[in-house]
Length: 136
Length: 123
Image (cartoon, rainbow over all chains, first blue to last red; front, side, top):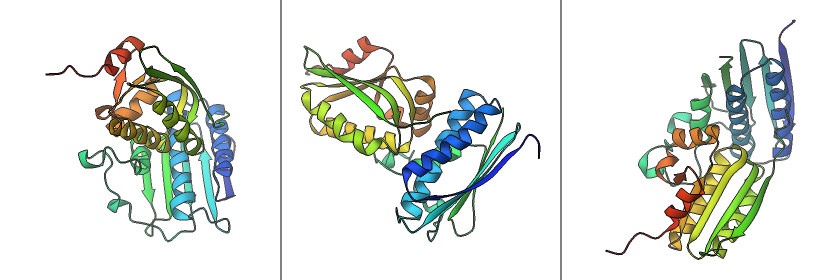
């Protein structure tokens, strides 16, 4: 369909492959004229989502893959990331902005995804995240 | 757009015993594991603390924030000061969103940062 970039990619559980996905999506975001702030938000969310899938979902297992589906339109970007892990309950992840967690080195990825994207949803088992960013 | 990873760290040792780390590039999941030991090495070279200059940093993720939190922890353990300076607006926002502006000394310019490195007056 004209005006829509819709792709599906399957990548290995490594960060270099993740960067290639990031570049592919950001190329489309740039092509559609999203603002620098929106592009930054999308980049951050992709990095956090893929890092979670590769590290926590697949445990860097080279036999496991990460599926990425995305659609870029002039109105919005929709990104879905699925790993082969058992999933998790995002409601049980400690809030990294609480005083007692502020000086912990990890645990900010999901919070940043929520803060920088307009929508973020997990599937029931927690091994798939779907994120939306409107072109504002 | 090329979001190619990598962080360059240029370390300058000041006369006053502090070091200035001029960072450029991306502090992300890919560059963070290699960057942490280099940053800690630079901090170890200092006597009073370190100024981290972010003017050349384009992107930081939660992995990069983790590197900075670990650097701050190391500085506190050694009774050294750490100041972050020249944060571009998009990076400053991440610190605000994460509430890490409560943890780090975020300075407008190098003079503010030098002041921040001075030990508190003895009472």
